[in-house]
Each structure stands twice: as structure tokens, then as C-alpha cells.
Length: 100
Image 1 (cartoon, helix red, strand yellow):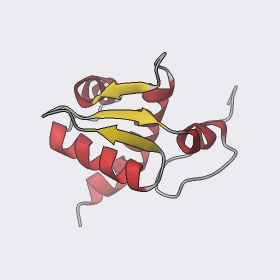
Image 2 (tube, rainbow, N blue to C red):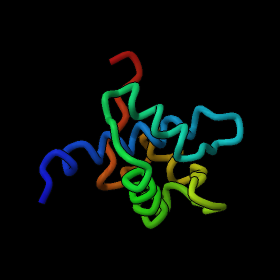
Image 3 (cartoon, helix red, strand yellow):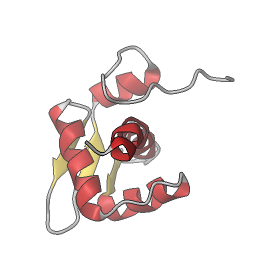
Image 4 (cartoon, rainbow, N blue to C red):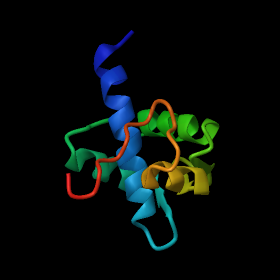
């Protein structure tokens, strides 16, 4: 088990959902997600991000299209509900309360 990856994953997943929700069309490709994660000190290769996309898709938080070497994730209603804190998806950090 890689302890660092296990502790970073829930936070990275939340960052990914927030980045997707902030887009006008609710989607973003893995190259841009890599840059977004890097802003928070998470430096991972594209394959790692693709693995997180796959996990989020299995949980129903995103849908993923794979047009080539870059994958595109789009947040789902379930992912948005997690961000609104009306549901909790185990394995994804909870968003902070507004104003906290």
C-alpha cells in the first residue's frame, strides 16, 4: 500500500469535482486537471489522473470519454450533489462549509 497515494486520493478527487463544476460545460480533460491538481501541490502523471477518473466514474460522480490519450471527465448530478453536501460519496473528501 502506498500511504501517500491513499491520503492524497480523497483530496484530489474533491479538487477534480470542484474543477469540473467550475467549467461552463461541466467538463475538462486530464491535461487541464493535471494543472489544477498541481496548483494544490499534487503532481501526478496522466495515467494516475485517468485512474482517478475511472474511480469517480465507477462511483457515478463523473462520466468519462476517451477520445485518445487524453480523457475527458464530465461531472454528473451525483457529483454535484456531493459538492452541495446533500450526499456523501465515500472516498472523496467533503467540501468545506461556506465561510469556514
